[in-house]
Amino acid sequence: MGMGAKSSTRVFGRLLLLAALLPSLAAAQGVEDLSDEALARAGIRRLESERLTLYTDLPSIPAVDQLPALFDQAYPQWCQYFRVPEEQVPPWHATACLMRAPERFKATGLLPPEVPAFQHGYTLGDHFWLNEQPSDYYRRHLLLHEGAHAFMFTRLGTCGPTWYMEGIAELLATHRLADDRLELKYFPRDRDEVPYWGRIKLIEDANAAGEDLRLERLLPTSPRELTDRLGYAWAWGAAAFLDGHPRARDRFRQAAKLVRAPDFNRRLESLLDDDWAQLSAEFGLFLHDIEYGYDFARTQLDWQPGKRLPAAGKKVTIQADRGWQNTGVALEKGKTYELRAAGRYVVHQDPQVWWCEPGGVTLRYYRGRPLGELLAVVVPAAKAAAKSPPWGDAIPVGLGGALTPAQAGTLFLKVNDSPAELAENQGELQVEIKSASAAAPTSAGARAN
Ligand SMILES: [Zn+2]
Image 1 (spheres, rainbow, N blue to C red):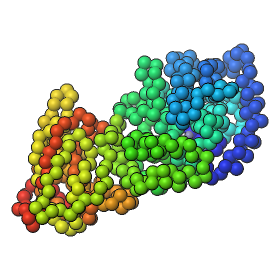
Image 2: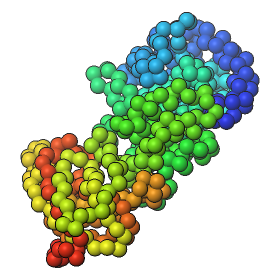
Image 3: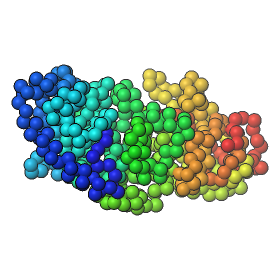
Image 4: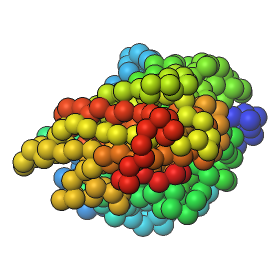
């Protein structure tokens, strides 16, 4: 996943490095004229397609032999993503080595000595090298990851800052293959679809370890800081979020045009403009709640600041098929409020419809609470929410109870469910919010946060 050129702030170093390697790349080109017999003696096969020449010492199995054809399917998808024409003179073509025993490739000159040691893969211009991987999925993933680097490097001229270079390569490499049809930029719905990918698990582990994964920390990371496995998961998460979020998507895709700008990050922030703080806070929510099949549309937040609670209280309707919903009510720090909820809604459909009330169903728990239980969180303004994410402080409300916020903010409510399974929910619930002095407290449920 490394590359000859790593940081947008080191343009000159990159050009010098590339220039220094050109003679040996030319030598490698010469080696590519090796006869089939010479390759066979070295235990290497050559597989050709329109867009890829692949040298490999792996035995002929369908999952390996189909790689060049899949690479050909990736090419138009890259062109579409980066909005560049498919046609080019001469036609765009890459050369790759997929290696079980790198010494074979060294001996034939296919792996020149100037290519530094690497763990998974390495790209230089339109050449890249990959080590064999433990699953068919992850071998394809790595080929597509390095292929995306090669594409960006040759068709866009460079790859942008480290987080963007790796994040976009990961975004475009994460794929689904169904009936020999390759779909790039796929958000996996299930762990079994992506053996050895592991990005979501790495983010969950980092959450549990209390790592600070804010966008503000990711954007300036150097190659050295990003090259561990969490770094790739983090960069993938950012690209998947910005590309998946309905409010960010179009402007994030425009950023591909900015890869040559030395102030790429600043220009991306100004593209996202007033939404930057909100998106940054919602990225924190995405990482906190991350699941296979995360539903970006149903989890996006309305950041309209709440208004003071009217003396008579307020009734709000909460949809069962959405994530956190803004009640429009601003709560004051240390003041006690009374919530009462009622309604009947569906929280599960397959194989059987599960009806539920705000107390939730105890047949199934999600993240330690009953599925469908009403939850509350008090959200400060976006800038503060991005800096100190409130998402871990969700308060179980259930059928009702008292709530005393530890910080001021807008009250958000939702029913407890996976952000991957909201689409199957149906129905709504009514919640009454009152100042505790105007309502008789009940003994039921909610704690202060
Ligand atoms: Zn990479």
